[in-house]
Length: 401
Image (cartoon, rainbow, N blue to C red):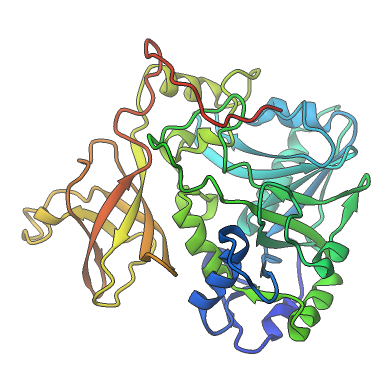
């Protein structure tokens, strides 16, 4: 396991340490909603005295170098990576033989090394799995988390460095003459992917999320820049609320031992349906072409009038069933996976429900403090999948690589 010193961002005034999957960085610096507005300013066009960044230095960084790196990663994961040009980004999933999601990997290649950005809990098991699977290929794998840290921000547009403060640009690590910045592909359906959300205006269309690698020594430089007012610091609570609003899944929150990509609309950015064989491909193809995912992701609008915020894992029920005695109530429809307090919409959440959960019905989330009323926006519909025989609609904004 990689040992890291405490992030200097935690020394900033008001810093409150995060728990759960983001332990090791700041949840907020005193006002999560204000920090969210600062972080969102670039995307929305609002002015800000200085751009905001999110300390993600507790997350993992793995390097895969060598001439076989992209063809090898392509062969074992869900996304087509062989055409990835230096400086380009992608997202890919490592699946089990049964198509279950085991790892979600953010990839940026510099022409010599593929940099894999992962949540903290993934780092050690993914690095060990890759080491076991390298065989005689010309690849070298290393956990680089002790050398490099991740910093996140929302860009002003699709360019990787649009609106980025000069102090952050100068702190970014480079490889092959390219800044090591991962640009989230979520705003568009990537080539070879498919979107299950039936909406003309996807809320993630302007989710220009970026994750840049900086040498760990530069974290102190960036912290000093915050103190001088050249940057603003936003905690992970701010980033999480905006991610939820963009319907963007994350491994550490939305995924459990049964999750397949279809359930989370992750076919949109991390799966190529026409690439060569990889572990779990048979399940991906069968569910998409012939079946339906057994569960589906929804976005919840929560009643905030009682100031009760649900927690991940809280069950979701039909409002009509909420008053029934425990021995008469049916099983919950599903459970909450992520919760945030959005600066415009109030409390929101992502939840994974059974495929058969009715659409358009009033819901409640059962919490320790009582039931919270909710309404669901469908992300993955009950009829998702079973694409064979359907008339395929054009995928607006599909990006080629």
